[in-house]
Image (tube, rainbow, N blue to C red; front, side, top):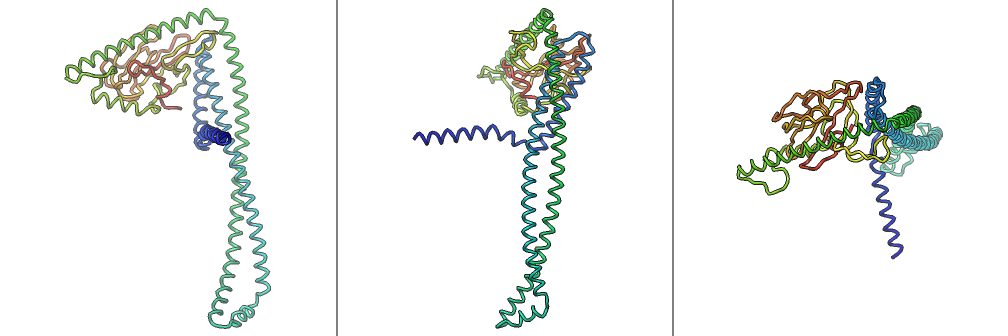
Amino acid sequence: MHRLNNKILSFFFLLVLLINVLPINAQTKKELEQKKQKLQNEISLTNKLLNETRKNKDLTIDELLKLKSKISSRTDLIAAINSEMKLINKEIKKSNEEIGNLENEISRLKVEYAKIIYYAFKHRSSYDKMMFVFASKNVNQAYKRLKYIQQYSEYRKAQAEEIIKNQASLKLKIEELKHTNQEKTVLVSIEEKEKQNLAIEKAQQETIVQQLQGKEQELKSELQKKQEAAQKLDKAIQRIIEEEIRKAREAAKKAGTPSTTKGFPLTPKALELSNSFAANKGKLPWPVTEGVITAQFGTHPHPVLENIVINNNGIDISTTAGAKARAIFEGEISSVVIIPGEGKVVMIRHGEYLSVYSYMTDVFVKKGDKISTKQELGLLVNEPGKSKTQVHIEIWKGMTKLNPEFWILRR
């Protein structure tokens, strides 16, 4: 029984190991190349945003958050390079094995061919071949001997062709191996450069944190204002949702179809829209044409202030000056409100779901408008003297807050 339990434990351990390893191995070289390109584009955009931020002489949390985002992208890039190198090492190992097998096969074929040539040389006379056939006991044996001579000749020819074919394959494999080794050399060089960049950026991050720690009171004041603005937005969203639920229930009651559930009462059309929104989870477009996530969903330690936890009901995406917010899915404008500290805020109803966009200075839509996917909603605030442009987006299902990172397309 003890041995059986050990076997079962070993099996489960192997199963867990395979589950953890398979997704990594499942990535192809092409997928890793695409991932690397996306990360490099993200790093390039973050550099552009940092250059804009650094035009402001005062050091800000925004600069630190952008730098942290770049460090995260750089770390992922190095991981992708490592994964690609592992694949290349496997290719090199496989190529070396195939080259060894081909060389052994060519050697074997050459030995056999040498024997054939030697035998053919000893029996090169047409007279010998004819005597071999005429010495047959009967016609059937003569036919078989004639056939043997023909097959032997064809076999000799086939052996020669096989040697030529394998030599061509060997040459091709050697060229492939040479190319793969060159790829590895380039990757090793890139990885080393990326590691150096990462070390520099981490040192910059440490310096910025130390400098910002000297502005503790200013940061606390800034954080308090941001938290108050977030609470106002949260209450405004809840009021609007409650009002929409109340109106939807009244409409359903008048139509003679009162809702029996506690959630948002949906018409058949609204239910279809809601299901369509849910079906596109992980594939929704970003609320800006380009940007990097600089503040994640949920609770996190403050990047500078010790023992302080911040809560984010959505995500913040930093983008370029002059950028516009856009709808992540079709729907209807529920409300357009102004929240001090959040700018102008647009809320879009997608059946049971609600998407919320903050930090706009000008809005191009109004309550009741039908909105299409990627339609521009408004111009984002470019804070004077801070070179900071970002959009804050939240996604709600009923009264439940969802993580927008799980809904928008992964870049």
